[in-house]
Image (cartoon, rainbow, N blue to C red; front, side, top):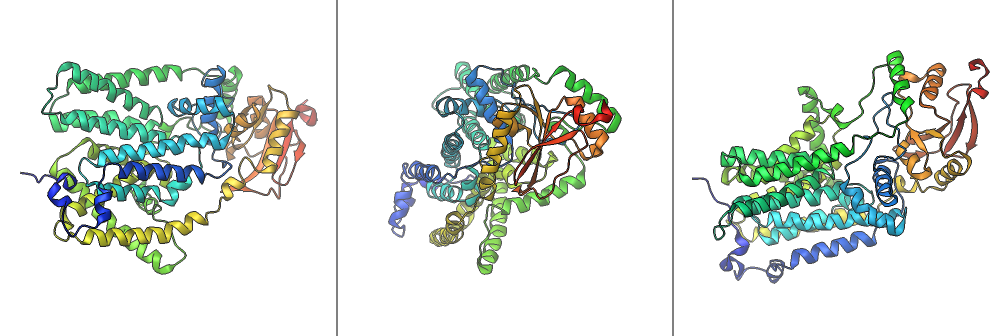
Length: 540
């Protein structure tokens, strides 16, 4: 027989051990975790920083929300995706996060700080849902400590300054897992009638779609449900059939909605001729990033290992950095042990989901970054605590308080200085920088509404100016002749040059792409060139 994981927090005998500190009994109270999450959410809200960086993702989300509020088609954003440029993002993002942004945009307009509230509130709700998932196997005191470790992590705290869908995805992802755990396990006191299974299937199917509708990696959830039925139950239940059907219908409707295109008719045809002349077309969606090369997968495994360590922030003290690295490596072994222990005891959808999520990351050819690990970071902590709870602390009960106190002291020593002394060059030199605002103002006031702007960050240009915008072509189009061909093909009117290296830097050198360009605006960070045949007699 496989061992069964204990649920210590529900055992009144253990709850009244005389050696237990009084604070442990308070932490075990059902209200402790929600109160801690509420305090963290308030802290996040009052420490938000003004500005937004040049990443570009946020701008397309806001453009979608803007369209929902103002009654335009969801995809009519002004972003001109093209096959001769480096991939900067898909033509449209899934609609769930923009739907949440839309009421805030309707009330406050393009108020970046107000729009960040959606991410902060989503983070708080996702942390509460994660706690509900973890409480099924983990003592409440460990869940309380896990919540603090996640909430006081400088990377996650800093991430709330970015308007992105990650925390919204986490809400519906964790909700889906919680519903699966509740309904798939069954309640001995309540028979699994067809009506109950159908109701549960509708709820799970809807929550799975909402996760997918926030980020496409949510497709792991229906695969998790199907795998659980096949591997653990040896049959596909009515609940799963309903849930998968609901998910499939909603995902199909989304794909139909996304089949529209607002790229000008001449645009794609002209660019097709360009790719035939100069290069093969670039990828236009995330599927083009799938990479099955074993050597590259191995490199991503190593890359994500180092990315995961990014949740343990560096310190100015060499001693603390060494201690921190040792702790990370030790906790990684504990987390692996906890995951194996959970598999040996009873496989649940949580174990299947985690394996599926990691598999998708390893097959996705984008560079490994800490951002992609954010939704599974709480699970990393969960399995480490689970291993300690089941194998170490039953034999050394007082050790848990020593470990918790020591780690919390280390967390405070590292995180608090980082969070109080955090600098924000990417936000300070982002889209609200005075020179950036001056450039955007020139585009809005001195160009026509139907002009097309070529810029390295086309989605931001479309949001900030209301103009159609395409990104700069790849290096294969470096000659003056190819530049002219590109601008003619897309019908572009202006080119904006900037020095973007990690964040915006002064533009010390800028040249016209060809003789067909004439300077129209310049400051320390930007040059705007006007394109036209009248500046280039040889093309007349």
